[in-house]
Amino acid sequence: MRWRIRSQLLVPPLILLLGVIGISSWTALASAQHARLRIETQMRDIAHTVQRYFPRDQQILELMSGLSEAEFLLERSTGEFISSMNLDADPRPLPDPFDNWESVHLGPRVIIGGRTYLCSGVRRDGNVLYILYPESLWHDALWAAVRPSLVLGVLGAVASIVLAVGVAHRLSRRVQELERRTRLIASGDFSPMPLPRGADEIRQLAESVNEMAQRLAQLQDTVRQTERLRLLGQVSGGLAHQLRNGVTGARLAVQLHAKDCEGKGDTEALEVALRQLALVESNLKRFLDVGRSDLSKRAPCSLTTLVEEAVSTFQPQCRHARTDLTLEAHERDGILMGDASQLGQLFVNVIGNAVEAAGPGGRVSVRLAGTPHCARIEVRDTGPGPNLEVAQRLFEPFVTGKAEGVGLGLAVARQAAEAHGGRISWRREEGQTCFVIELPTESGVRSQESGIRDQKTPVCPDSGLLTPDP
Image 1: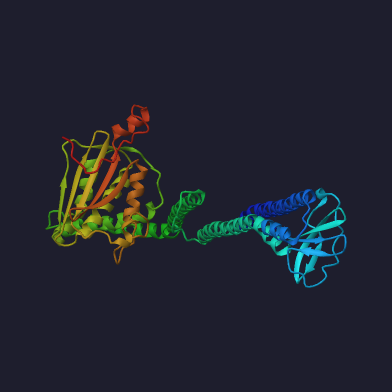
Image 2: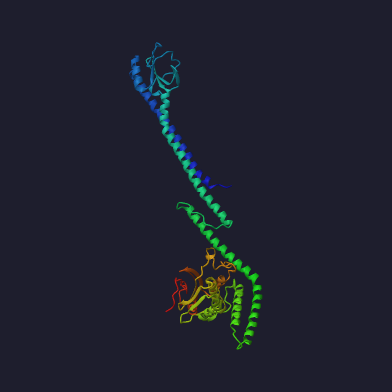
């Protein structure tokens, strides 16, 4: 059986309310009893005084009535009545009188002259004095005694009910909002919910729900990216192999023809064709490398040589489009430990992306910098930079802002950088797009493997702008 939070919150105040009502009722009854006892004590005092100084005439009775708010009726032994009020008829029947003043109390009701009294009598020397207390005065005294307790109890009850209902409604609404939000998360909506006011457990729970939604969104992106890579590897693997074989054959034929043409004329056109075929082959290799993060072979390789080869690949294209492509390398060559093929593809992808972004008449600068343990490659272009739709997901597969782009170049570049223990990032700076590649050198890798460096300290710390070695 479901017991709602609102009911759980209302039950304790209701139990408390019943206790307040019970206490108020008991207090009211006690006050009523006290009022009755006070009036009866007053009547006994009057009866005691009367027994000692029994009145003889109407004037004394009227004086006693003015002092006590009660009416008095004297019945003589002869049957004659003397009263403090005007009698227009025989007042009988009257209750039996008491012989002792201590027995006097608020007796039964009698109606005299159209007015109701509580009557009690005391006898002395054959005469009877009846004390008539107006019932209306008794009711007024009773209500005056009971009213504070009842009013306080009712107000307390109403206030507790209103407060309990308000608190229950507020908490129930906040819990319902959390329930609605969790249902949205279950349906795939991971947007954060507005945090409720107040620093209480409900707000902490909402913060936990938002944190859970953020992690689920990240997990979903990771799963989606992994699934894309898996499907791409299955679908494009065979096709890429076939196309690459065809391009390799075409390049071999052009190389043989270029060899036959040596010394017979200008072979620049054949060299451009060979470079373009090599570029096509490298692009096909993107499909084969997507999803691969393992290093098939690890060997020392020259950073300067790899970057120069990548730059030379795009020199004919840049000369044709009048794109200024420059390389700035420090004197000391950096030696990387890794797969030269994957590292070369990494540099080709990033530099090619910059050349395409700069366009005809633009500028692309490649600069090598770093430390003895970390090589840094900075690639800048004067292009407009990625649009807002893809800026946050630039390194994800199939994410591209180009009309005819596939969105694999930067994804493969990031995988290659991470496979070699490095990273790649980008930023807009002074109207230029700057890609930064950071890779551990051979000395950096060996120092980490030998335990010389602290494992918690990265080989390539994030130090902001790149500065060349002195």
